[in-house]
Image 1 (cartoon, rainbow, N blue to C red):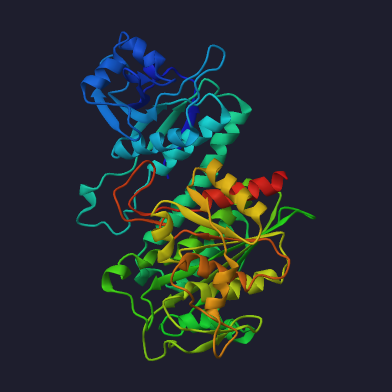
Image 2 (tube, rainbow, N blue to C red; image 1 turned 180 degrees about the vertical axis):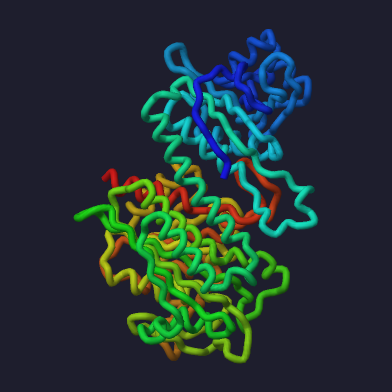
Length: 504
């Protein structure tokens, strides 16, 4: 884990190997953002012009490196934050916190292989300092566990980061940076889990990893194996997992924030590999299906952060884990499963398996009557069709809760968008033989999946469903603080939601 410290030392005299400053697109070319004044003075007021002469434009995420003779750092890395923020006579210009987060991440990612890096971006208030710290730590990530012969060809992440802030001694600024130092390691852990080859992370191994993470955070953990699942009637998890030689698990984590606190239930889809089962996926569509446990990774990681931060909210986390494989023992289209609590489901497509394991967990979580219940899942390809690969969907049976999660996601820096649950689509899941089918109208498939899950929510409970199918895995080039591969999607939003509930 990269070490990050706050400092009030002038950026120009900071003893680091590389120094990050911010630039923006101004009306007449590149302009410096706050934090770079001392460095510009050392460059005799020519820093912006020098960056521009090297091709820098201030475009968001663009990194321009230049050798330095005027300051202690060997290299200056100018990172773009996008358009120049405009202030008034009495109102200083304020840069968007997500823009700062992405800029810090892009710069640190571009400086991989550098031992010591200083960051002189706007960080003189708690929110800005927290955002820059988060972005820097998120950018300092690489999954190298399986690099052997090629290890030398792939640089190590930045080793140490010094974050410059004129308010480095301010209590709120320190708290914001401390929060980032608790939050981001959990996001990186969830990335690691998503990136791990499915051969090395079957349900039992992921359950063991969850227990270890929970124990380290002081969270109580319980794991149900296939025998316990059968005894308790978790037909969805068992049905999905029966085609694999590696049996399913159900992980339950419990954190208590104190007597009388509000209760948040988190539920995450944990398909450790999804072949589609007998409704087999095309080969290319399987290539990234190790990420189909991204929802489980998110809720487990978020629960550990909530505990480490000591938030005044009770959390129960449920992670149904299974491997969806085709074999002689696999479930068949037209099989009927009995979900926890008794509802029967006709399986029309074995590749619509995530909703089956979630149904079990949602039904069980409902028995505890939580104040808020949120499930997170890489659930549908239709989510990518509707919202693209970077924006998750929020569906809910409560408009106020949906709005609260949308607001939390925005503050956390995660792109999510509210989506409806049209009642007329429910009829398309009527079954000729069971209570409900696991497939319905193919138009609006993301919404149909949400309506399916809603069937298992306890009466009167506030529930939301986050479909993170696209954002959980980045198939494209790295950008901002987001690497290629596992992203750790939804962890930051869930922690922000828990903070909001604790504050309320």
